[in-house]
Image (cartoon, rainbow, N blue to C red; front, side, top):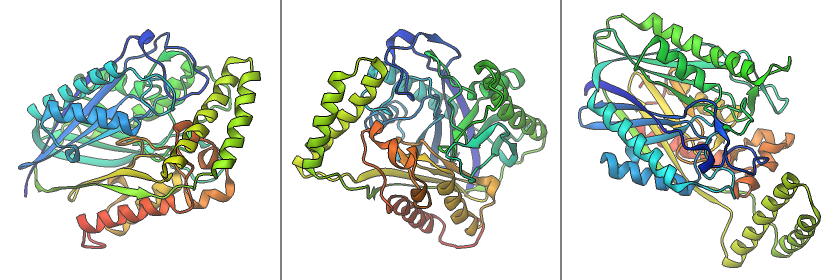
Length: 439
């Protein structure tokens, strides 16, 4: 084993507003109009001896499989890292350029190439500045202004934080994770949403030290605003909910002696099949297409017409796939990073609901990981719609049945979540064969 070394860096990647459409909401039919706050890509470069792993966070809603492949290809070429050596997480802001999350929105591929270039610069700088030191992890508090938007009890308010300090006690980088949809900003202006407050406050308190946000199990969790606070007030309130507790923990760690210790990093990256709900029969698709075509022709209001068009496009695509003999099942990348005796990161290419996150945390706790050392990372290495937990099917709702077609995907089946959980369990068994032993 070797000493753990880490480096951190970030780059701004804000596009020209008029050149991009914003992801996340179906009612936006025109390009962005301005910039509320800048977008960043941030990198944590980890190395132990010859082993390397880079954890990146993009201020975007997510990436389609095609966009993930495109961006990853650029990063591979510009850094020399293999795809299995880095993870692309997304903060899930709903006010960043379209990257394929909502099917049908125009994608600015030149900007994506620029974002990938900035990501690569951040990775290369981070590796050029790695220093020996230690991570300190803690659950630093709760997000108070959130709720389960499905009207259900499951909710994860916890804010996880990892602070890396060099042997001199200086803070080099910060990791933070929480579960909440970044949906405060519904305007036409580019924004990292409430996560922007963490970026801004970190720069004030720790100049030059990136604070990297990792989206957690928050796809059924929204900002809570019962008093009808204005957007700017709610954004600041939720943002400081996160930032103040994260940075107060960094203050507590700063200055402590952090003698580097010998560690090992382990990772696994593999593709798994996820069974989805079967396509409707071809004759049913044709009937639906006929009905939707008539509705589209008769509808005059632009947003309503757009909503009809998205479903019409989906049904047409399904019919084409049926004719080709294709199935609705997905093949998706799963990835796990283990820093032995330190932390574990599970990268999931879905919008992840609370119950799924809890199930994965239970797996990891059974293997000896403490809750504060567990990062369940949604919206990572592509976003393939919502991974609907089996336990949520009886409750229905948008995440279970309504959202998938916006992604151009079939809905989850009752086997979908379990297939992912089984694959993660297999990966953990390979990485951490010593059950119930701290790794």
